[in-house]
Image 1 (cartoon, rainbow, N blue to C red):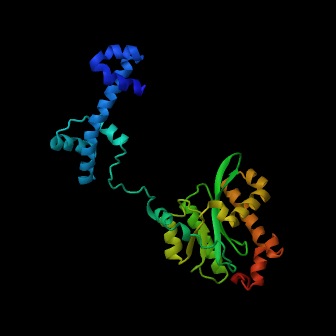
Image 2 (cartoon, rainbow, N blue to C red; image 1 turned 30 degrees about the horizontal axis):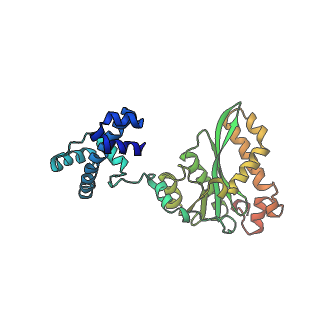
Image 3 (spheres, one colour; image 1 turned 120 degrees about the vertical axis):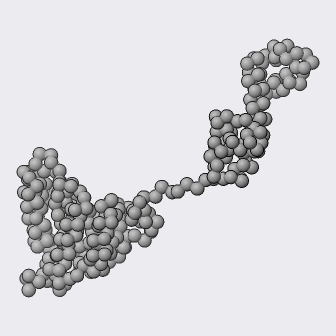
Length: 298
């Protein structure tokens, strides 16, 4: 088709455009559409050259200022649709500074330190040095929902601090942290420099959580870089708890009774339930063998 149109251009003035179109079998609409397109490309070329110069001189200009500059400086009248088409077709992206859409507060800082926020993966710890935590949902009383948070010692499997509540929020997390600190003090230990490891849930990146953990207690915070895969200790605890207490959790008539069920389970879990990874000893027995005795038992 392009060759036939070229022949029409070459001989049309001599033989007549219509006769050439008929002889070559080129529809008039096709021929004149091509001619308009060529004419448009030629006209756009002049605008393109001016646009490149203006954008180089004024990189912050949007299309409205470009349009005004084209008219006042170059004498080119270009409507906004044509101007945007030329910018798009020639990929003339305007090099204006656009701020990156970063997460606010601590969550945004964590994204910048992605490779150094997990303090526990691949490391070994002594008893009561590092704790894993997360939230899990409990369904009770015919479909009602509550949330459980536990801080479990990575080395001894001791469930050191836990709380149950109707909402998965900072209040539940802070109460769990208080329970952990109280449990440590029962062993004559201070929370200072001990690690708490969890995912990047909004609760765990909140100012309230970090202020309590870092500033008030002098602890260290660690974040899983790959969700549950890099936080297996508490995930294992959830699996055991829900499997061993399934019917009692479901049958609990209210939140008070549900909390009593969880309290009874963790009392059994810490003092009587044998763990194969601990040489078939319960967490408290394992801790006592390593010199960690509760002050109330001395």
